[in-house]
Structures are given as structure tokens and as C-alpha cells.
Length: 114
Image (tube, rainbow, N blue to C red):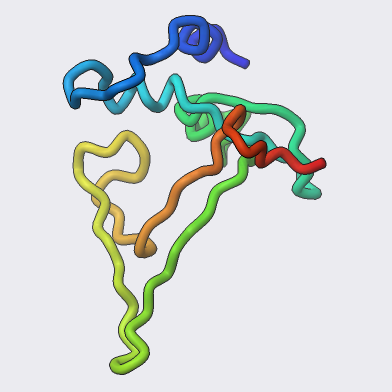
């Protein structure tokens, strides 16, 4: 766990978000994803921000659990795509699936594999 993640966890966010209190970067630091082994075992957690950082030693980020939704219209065989906002920290302006996210570490019910 990075120092940035530890600091964010020790200073939890307010219960009600008013749209002004936390930035996208604050959420990326606060929210922690499930880190995986190459065989898909949960081996820890890391902030969304740190798990998506591409570095020479970590050229594809940290392997973590995520999910994607693909919405098809069966009457036309069309797939609904989204273009990510230019202001997104991760993958701005990229055309991608209908929606996606991450199961977060420490949530109830627990999503950690038993």
C-alpha cells in the first residue's frame, strides 16, 4: 500500500458527497481495488490511482479485479459504447465498453475470495 493510499484511508471521506468536497483524484486515491496474482487470487489491495500507474517497472499497471458491461440492442445488433471524458484521469477520450468499474476492497458484503 502506498503512503498516499494509507493517508487517504486514515482520513476517510465525508459520508455525503456534495460534488465539491472531493476531486476525481481524491476518489482515485481513496478507493482501493483488489490486487490479484496471475492466477486470479486476491493478494492485497491498492488505490485505483496506484493500480493504474504505468511505469517502466510496472508497464501495465497493477493486476486488479475489474468488470465491464456490454449493452446490446438485440433488435438491431448494435452495441452501446461510451467515449470517456477528456477530463478522466485514466484513458481520457477513449471509446470503450458500455460501462465499467471495480469491486472495491473493504466493502460489505466482502468480495474477497474465500
